[in-house]
Length: 497
Image 1 (cartoon, one colour):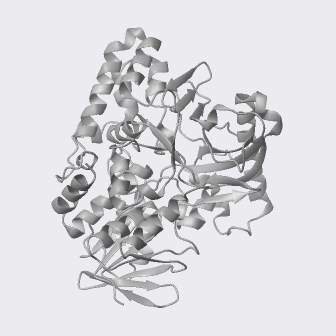
Image 2 (cartoon, rainbow, N blue to C red):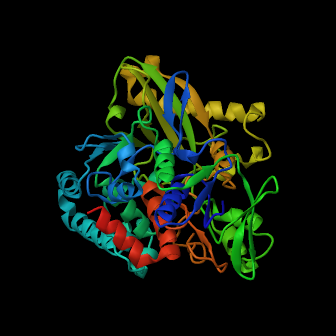
């Protein structure tokens, strides 16, 4: 059986693209190099505890909201078991000198900020007005078929520069910039539009998926198969083949060729240099992609305990060792030289009542782990394992300090570094969010979905926006260039009203 479209990668981006193209009548095959589909959507079990890998908390999943509508169109929504976090405080920001509860509604958040900073009304109102404007300018958030055209003040101005011009109140700036671990770029460099769009999903509600009842990866696979798409695992793509400026298909690592007139590549864009080494993409284009900076990496410590409850059952907690919450990732964290500058604490699902599973995610420089880049999972040297243990224990120390009533039973069950992510995703450095969105001229991380090879399009969180919402939207954007933008977007809007 021939294929009209091949999708490379079975993470959120790949499965979204596969379902969209199959729904549009294309004979679609999703290829995955790992033994099982799902990429970082998959959860895993250690010592009887289940931990999420790459998807922890998502926003905009309430009925009628952006992610809810896209997942409904994809046929994924009804196959999931989402759990809403505490609407009054789904996110808590912990600073050295204060704690701040972020509610899941822009109006409530504004009122809480005004109560904390009554003299900053002008700055607070201006922030929310500009945030609403930014969301309105992003067409796929509003299911409009027009093409995104962001103004310079949202594209070229950093979060820090904007906030510095808005107010001199450092604690307020710290709160308003504190979500940067969710997109992996220092506020001093992150474009304002990225911050505003990620903030919007946070302010429309926060949810987790009950992986024990309805695995996220399984829901996507079932939805793909329901519309006639196929997924094939253990199929690592070694080359994307083209001739005369048109894609012809892919060649697998074992030498097998799979033909198709459309290829959607959802991996890290820096892989393209090797995959398209036979020609098609210009050398200057590949050099520009190779020069783009990476987002942060994530080091994760999986922590389990029994008995005492803590707030992680109903909210995420972001911990900062710096009041400004905007210090970039220091080097040498793995060696124990630097403090953990920030920590994202998110709960998993315990195997039964009274048993708790949580992940502590520390943003780390992915370059720091390159001393062990030539090693593979399961065969890394003792100094790597020692570095992991040191950092995991420092994360455990933060957990115990935050929740002393549960500290006695807390223990490290597992840990992972950016190299773990690299091995699972083939991302060159194992960065958490792919290419870094930046205000630096020439290094803005902006890669178009279209390429000069007819039939080859790009998707994934490096392309439009990071995170689940951004990745789904980016894949829809890529598919729209294949099947017709207006028809696809209008169909999604109509079927999910």
